[in-house]
Length: 370
Image 1 (cartoon, rainbow, N blue to C red):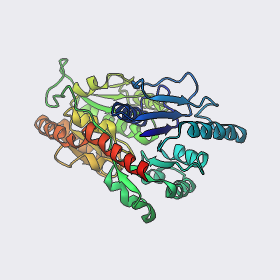
Image 2: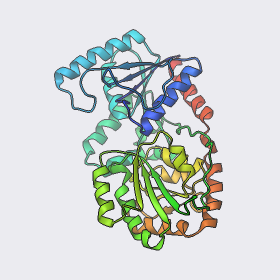
Image 3: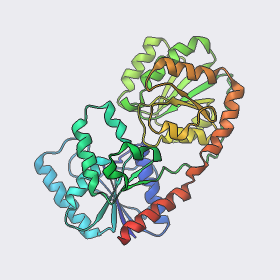
Image 4: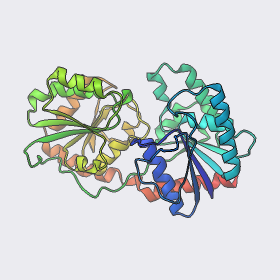
């Protein structure tokens, strides 16, 4: 098959969307397909994750992809993208997230190419933003998609009924961990680690985790909190750490190219997000044998955490008090962490990469034949 994948930007970005785009394109070229990757990046853009040499990466190189374009720039972009698509003539274009999908839909009108909307977030994300108009625009725009790919089956009912028959559920691939955590055992320095991994931004809700840890710290003097990742919320989170006097107990090390070392050397994982598409960091933590805590009201969390089996839910969504209760239950019980850690590894085997890649391959083959 001749396939094209479209994403807004991947330049030096270490997020879940960027990793999934590159992982999937790498897998499909390895299976013998011809794959183009198109992004709005500038010419000098570099991928954070390794990209297979057989993936042809087209960088638009017309203005910053993170800035709003003028009408003149949008027209120039439209002509360039339309010319590229005509030249490459893919049998299907997979657009990651709604922005690239709506843009590519407009730019390829009349070319007879089917577009797939690879949605990375559930519709509930609109509940946390002032984007009522955007909700209507996105959901109505998805009417023209050949398929809408969601990551969790529970998301199907969150869409309007007129879209549900166009939805396919394909979760993210999760690699088998090469190292295992020992959640019941302290690290060589005698300390325990509560870990979280993700972009430091509003949806990840790390201020609530810091507030919960501020309540936990006096009762658990041998525990530390580490949040691996970076983002626009770093100054605010660093200010909170100073406010709570937790400089010696909280570490914000930034992005890590070897995050598996953090998973393997931690004893408990927490995902405090308000919403998730497919919580990659949570899945990876479970794969490494870490029990996990997350909010019951957070989309994606209930699809990975089995209450009392591989982790615990905090009631609601975004409440520091309920998060404190759930974390206390596991931080105070090493035997429970051990048993849940063993269950965590088994719970994630259904996301075997080759199984997930085959699902994508089958879906795109069906669309290409149509």
